[in-house]
Length: 260
View 1: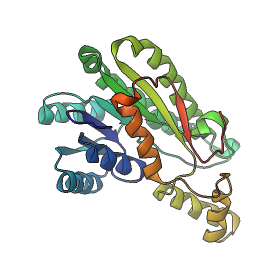
View 2: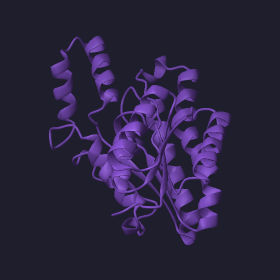
View 3: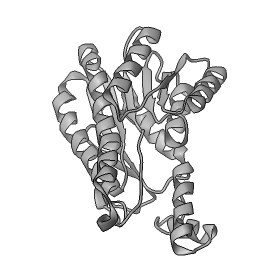
View 4: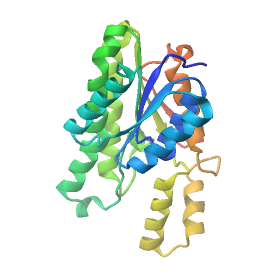
């Protein structure tokens, strides 16, 4: 599966799943624009992939929670590459834990604005050129919480359910013009986000970090965390020509935790 002559935009591209996808796409020939709020991280990612794989890359500061920031990021990308992306990976997101009755409206709005609104903004900015070229890939990083829900993450789960609804609806709108829209639903992935989650579990329950980690591993029938590279491998298939028949799907990468 090769991605030569393809330009990919990856939000949340400075670490975790986004970083792994950036490296995987570059390894297979794609030019990469890595977007995030933290410039130091995306500069390091783009420098490393250009050095290792010889592809063109660009760090783009972007806060997907703000339309102006997204529009500016696309302007910088088009100025640098001469066009918009062929592939958009909507990976940027947040998660906060709290009992529903202790959640406030600001917490609710933050999740919807970043996780769902950010996916909307970046996809809307990229789609007209994809339609004009009659080729494009939109890959939304959702979560198994977007299928099942989970306690203490009602705002997060609701936002990821919304991402799946957007994925399925848009996939049907653009299927006839060479564009696919899919979602990946990871389980617990071995990233910094999980490390922060473990810290919160320790603080709230008094368990040790090792006990908290083992509890998360037991959520999967495989008794392990998913590696970010496993999510990236699926993203590569969805971005490729070989994956053109996959459309409107929400595919789990969770070791069998959720079976639908």
